[in-house]
Length: 290
Image 1: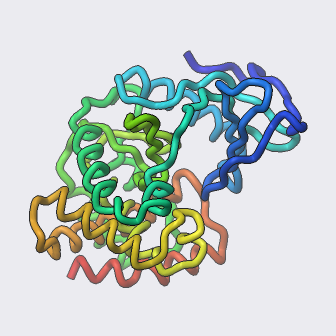
Image 2: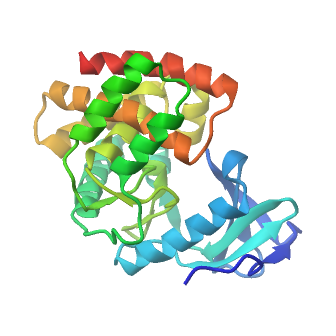
């Protein structure tokens, strides 16, 4: 059941809260007094009550589908920020952190991530609750000021041609959003969860591991260097396709990566500098349509 407008309390980041992680979308804190809970405070354009409430409700609906994810407890305000108190999964590591700590397991983790995507997209989604990723992409395209009119026509034709599918799509599909505890994986950061073609998620991973991997900030967030991120993509693609030669798969992933950039605008409206950056980044991806 969705929470009401004022159904949250205010907390302070006193000495009981200990910062334990920081990613692209938020900061996480453990609680010294209660080892069973975790606080996530969103950042940037996701740091608002609407985004927090959406993530909270989506996460509960994902759990209802039988997919493993930490339990959501309550929404809180933290000063001028908003966050979620959720179940703390003990002895956990993100998949990317495992790759950083044990580089010889990159291929293993990439293969596991491939299997997780297949299981995810084989799960029938609640299409009455979750959005269609295809429809979201079309809506995002209209808002994407960094895409010129000619390129919008190319992307629109492509999006319309994508086959309908009702399996689950994570939306922020990168291995930092899978945590593993005692061998069991859990999905986290579910604010963009939807239903649609699995290649939507593949395109997002391609952006993370191939397109953005040269950037220092990306390497800091994912705890891997450029070569390691490319290795993860190579192993993932081989596992997912079952072929060593995945050049055709990469071209398809690049097309969906270009689409993923416009999907983002429906969740986080880009600033002017970001729009310029996205315009530059998207141009090479559009060559995959030639």
